[in-house]
Amino acid sequence: MSSFTLDLDSTRRAASPRYAPPPTPLRAVLIHGGVTVLWVLLFLRAFGTGGTFAWSIGLAYIGYDTALLLFVFAQTLPLRRPARPMGTATGLQQNPVGLGVIVAAHNEAAVLPVSLAALFAQSTPPDEVVIADDGSDDGTADLLTQTYGLERPALGDMSAPGPHHPALRWLRLPHGGKARALNEALGRLSSEVVLTVDADTVLDPEAVGAMRNAFAAEPDLVAATGVLFPVCSPTPVGRLFQWFQSYEYMRNFLSRYAWARQDGLLLISGAFAAYRRSAVVAVGGFDTDCLVEDYELTHRLFHHAVAQGLRWRTDVIGGARARTDAPGTLGAFLRQRRRWFGGFLQTQLWYRHMIGNRRYGRLGTRMLPVKAFDTMQPLYGLTSIALLIGYGLAGQYSVVGPVACVIGGKIGLDLLFYLWSLLLYRRWVGPSAQVNLGWAVVAALIEPFSFQVLRHGGAALGWISFLTRQRRWGLQERTGLIAPM
Image (cartoon, rainbow, N blue to C red; front, top):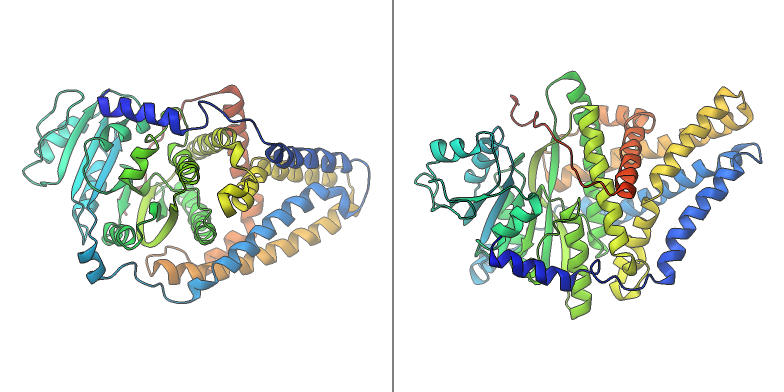
């Protein structure tokens, strides 16, 4: 471990509240406790009354989801107009920013050539590209030496630039996990802006330039995410998962745009993220103990900004687009969502003092209370489905009939939102948006009874991982980007 990484660890211990947790405020207890108590009361109601309100737990679930849809609808209205370019040529000449890329890779030889080719084909190339080789033992070393001409460095050292791509270097590390590899690479970069790009992520040609422009135009911007499109294996099952996840990603990135307008964007996708290096170093880099180091880092940046009186902000950059390898089988999908949700719960626990806290502005009073409900949303959803199936099997059609009408109305509303989102999304990210009007209608009709159940199932596994303190990610196969596209 380098002295820089040791310094980062020391800084993180001082900056992160998880090492010396502040007292849990009453407001956080009331918000989290209220969501849990409400679930218990609504669940008990299912056995004590008839008609539609016997399914009150489902009504609460639908009501919450509808409120979020209306919020996103209102906040994304500006996307009806063409996007304003981030920065101008003159502005960039007066305030240029250097940009370096870290590609953390553990046994990613199969996809590295694709992701590196995209980096070298950028219209505005990065100044530095560091392959943070996290103890790979597949064929990564042969790839970097034979294909890219890099000299094999000693363990813990970084190579000289290669003869074919002067910006490219190889940082060879013992296996310690993605967060540790990112922290080590941070100490080897000198650029003001750092992109973290997963080895299974392929950037569009304008992606680096869009990120560079965004950070040059806004000095207070410390973290930004690009817009991702999922790519799965070409098998029938893989294409089915890609179809569902394409519309899920569309809605999620529109939601991130909405929360960014409220100064409450927390989810900066580590697969394609940009950070102001000085800010990341100031808070101690990436947390090596968190399952979702990107999500946790954003919390810590906001925590530090409020403590120091800084006006740091985060954003999603519609002009920075990329494709990323996504799970194309049921097992891979559940493992991914288990890790995501388990890490989400970790972060909610560590930063519980921010929930409902006015010091953190709308992030504290709006976004984090919503996230508190999200911790229980899978339980609300799965319980709603189980109760509805139970009513049907028991022949309680006085409940099933009215509930079916409510669900039908919600599906109709979802369909309208899908179509509206599709229009906005195309205007926002341009013709590369890989979504189709007809298939969007089909997805809106069947998703509540299929893909949504799988998402909640993965989240339930995340609860188990969190409660049992599991820290293993599980292996993820790369099957989308290495296949013919």
